[in-house]
Every structure is written in structure tokens, then in C-alpha cells.
Image 1: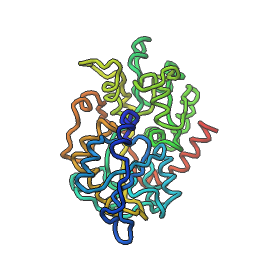
Image 2: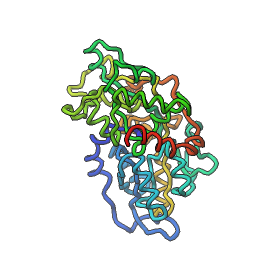
Image 3: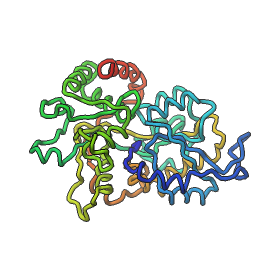
Image 4: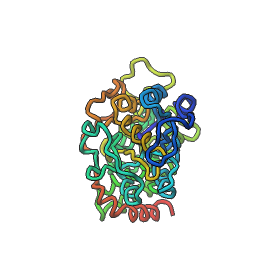
Length: 366
């Protein structure tokens, strides 16, 4: 995912706000038993949510509902805010909780069960709440270290490919990652190292990363857009790190937003260390206490529909989860192919995540 999940979020934000976020009147379809009558359905999400204005207009045309998007920070921060407002949510649907944070959302009772229309088209391996349907898979992808090709080519240095490479002396002071307590990419990267090195080895690995100069920042946006030297949207004066925790699908964004953009690029300006990947799935759920439940259900149905699924790859740079969605050619051509990504059972994440986060924080931040 967020996408997510994600350079495009900043690019389309202004257009999205103008075209699709304006609330309509209050005389439209009912939001369900006892709900306020409204034509607006509010989607609460992380800062990297993006969708084409034309696609959201299509949803409005089909259902009569206008989508209002309320962005609430990085994924971890957004989930924490939703927990604090459970029962009296800020919106109707939450999008952006992923498999690293899913148990926190479910254990806190954030969602009302809903079996979305078209769920039979969704990849079964992404349906992690199949018995209760409190959340619906929306996108999938791999969190991986990305690298700036130009930096390494200029220095005649091979980029890293595995977790083990990242602690080697030649990559000292080159990596920026996200805080695992506030960022789902950061948490996913941590879980990838736990899966790779086990309970007895991951702390020692992170001690080596720290000694090798890893930089920790609060969010994906800060790491990728500000500190990563390979980002087309980065603030180059501050962008001193040629390695960043991002997504296997980030390189297509660099092709699309390169300035100037080459007509027929042979490869993306950024690459992916495919031996550092962890699989991520993002979900949407109908918030418990939503004022517009009918609109929320309609939005979730739409989000696993072919139109929205085919729009996602070049908006949030994530993979569709439905079997009939086609990815754009630039996404297929320049996105990294991950033969083996680390995974972890949600039950294991639920049992150990908080302790892992506390331990990581004591090692890296405090």
C-alpha cells in the first residue's frame, strides 16, 4: 500500500479537494436506521490516500453520495486517532489499516461487520478477517528498501539487495527509515527483520543498523519526499540519503514524475532491494457509529470495484486485490517483481507487536 503507498498523493491533493471533497446538502439518501440523512460519505484515511477526481465523480454519479476525505496523518497515527474516537467516529469508512496494525483496530472494535459486494473477486490470501468481515482488503504490495540508482552508479558502488547488506560498512549513513510507532512502512520493515532474523536475532540486527548510521524519521512522507535523494518530489537540499524504506511499486512514480520526464526510459531512476521486502495489505472498514452506514457500504463496494481498483496503481502506487483489474503498463514495467517477501501471521503480530515496538524504541529512539 498506504498505499500505498504514494508520491502521487501530494500531486493530486489540490485537484482532489476541488473536485471531490465538497460536501453536498442534507436531503439525500438515508445513512441507515436512525442516521442523519446526508449525501456525503466521509472517508477517514492516512495522508497518502489518493484517487482520481473523475473516479470519485463516477461514484457520486452511481450512488448520489459525494466523498469527503479526512486525512489523519501516517497510518499508525490515523489508526490511533480512530481508536480514540471509537463509537463516535469522525467519518463513516476508515481506509488504510494494514496487516501490521489490523489486530489493534479489530481488538478495539472500530468496525461494524459488512460483507462487501464483489468480495468473491478479491484475492483470498488478502482476506485476513474472512470469518467476520469487519474489514475488506483494498490493496496489496511489498514494503522494501528503495535506492537511488544515480548515487550508486556515480560511485561505482553496487546497491544493497538484502537485509544483511544494509549493515555493511559501504552503506554507512545511507539509510533512512520510518519510526515504527507512527508509520506502517516503518513497522512493516521492522516485522520483516523479525521474520528474517527471528526473536533471538532481530535486536542484534537493529543494533548493527544503528551503528551503521540508520536515520529514523516520523513518517513515510518525510523519509521519501524530504530525505531520500532519489525522490522526484524531494527537497533536494535536505535529501542526503540514497536508501529509504518505501515500496516495491515506488519506481513507477519516479518515471511518471521525473523532471524532465524521458520519453522511453530503459529503467526507473530508483531501484528496489528485493531481499528486504515485507508484504502489506491495506483494508477498509465501516466505522462503528458511522452516521451514514448506507453511504459507507456503497463506498466500500466501489473501492473493490474494477474502476477504483484500476485507478489505484498510479494514484497510490499499490497493487489491486481483485482478479479482473488490469495494472497500467508503466506500473507493470517499472514496478519491482518480488519473488519472496517476508510475511507474518496476524496472530503473531497481535501477540508481540507492542512489545517489539517498545523494544525497538528503546534501541533506536530513546
